[in-house]
Length: 233
Length: 87
Image (tube, rainbow over all chains, first blue to last red; front, side):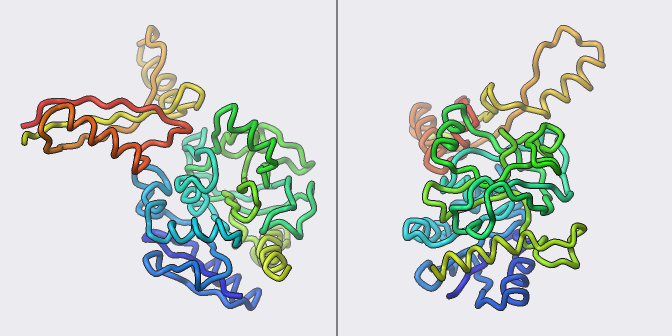
């Protein structure tokens, strides 16, 4: 089992993900520069957060044309697990591996805080160990995270059960006040139809050690453990 | 071959809120006394200098480029292309 953490110019959460995989979970992870990434050498890939290419044009728009993304598309077709975190999610959207758009937050600000999330789909490569309805706590840190889709796009997402996480309050309700950025239907994370490609705005790698969580939780670690579970099944 | 300036204007579709435009209208324009202004939408502007045989070719090249390189996201954006005479 070999996992690639892909680095683009401007990635800045790459070492955080690498630390969790290598030091917390003792997994054979590698940092790979985007120009050198080859699907055939890896069993899974993680696109970390940051500001690839300075977020120019739109967050993720330029990185989505990197040669790494052709390899990621092959990987997705082969059913291997791919996780896009924050800017990684934006890149997956811009590469059309996930549907919709991520727009500037409704309050026009960079929002950095811990949020509550409800798991909506356990049948993915990154949530297989998380029961549906479970509340997770993870931090968000972004300015372009407002999920948007057309009416028909949202209908399709619901029909195909592609919503993975929603922003909720502590009671688990997807309320307006629990929505930190104005995302459509409180969407924080979606997946492709097969469930092997997942993108999310929250940062599971920053919520993977008790010492770093104000909730003394390791909710983010569940996503990486789910990936191991998926790869071993 | 001649030079043409091709402008590409990208904006959100009406269904997608534009909080920047809303704030400019509410907190600057209306407060500044221009109550008759009904709406402000912000967008992105690309000014492209291109060498082409004629206007039509300049427009077509930029149109194809916008679609092939996904300069706009068709889920959420509309775009306009204006061709002007170059230098």
